[in-house]
Length: 249
Ligand SMILES: [Zn+2]
Image 1: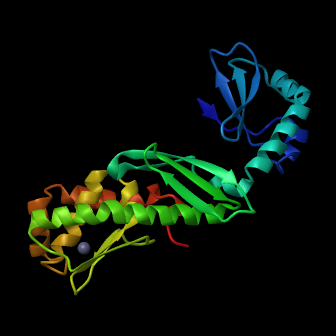
Image 2: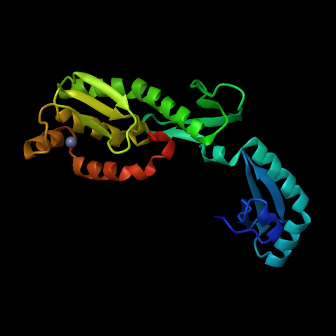
Image 3: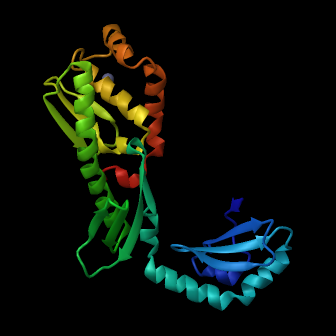
């Protein structure tokens, strides 16, 4: 069980302005107190179950120099702003998870490289917001790559043809269908389970027949997706699963 506890040592607390950032993990198996770095930048203290708080405090005090040195190194290597960047990104819709490696560099041009053969993203940046933007642009490219052909295949299945397909990142909509028959999809859909994405595609494609939410419209949706009520509810609730970097600022 993981618990985020406030560090007992006042001096160590001062390291990061009140919150030491040390994750304290209580362990039934550990034989002794251990301080370590869990990659990429988490300081962790393993505490054998039943250890008295006084002993823990004393241990931290005696390791104060190591904690300070290590914290300084980690802050230099991973500035706090960059720690908001994810260490991995899962595109659930296509069942793939990319690891994210961050190289801090304020001299070179920020960039993101997608090594999709090994599902690895390498980000070179000097700030969190810049890294967020690189990830959002990556998601857009992925959206175009995966959502366009997916929508085209569903359209064929339903026997309709959108005039135009647009992939964007949006804060408030998963997708939309215009009077002109143009369908717009949110690239962040890729972060959701495939069943939800498929439902959204069916939902928008059915608007090509009925540009409203009338009974006739929902009857058509039900023909292609009998579970539409449940899926619609889940999709509306899915915004909470979307990380901030996937949304436009
Ligand atoms: Zn609708």
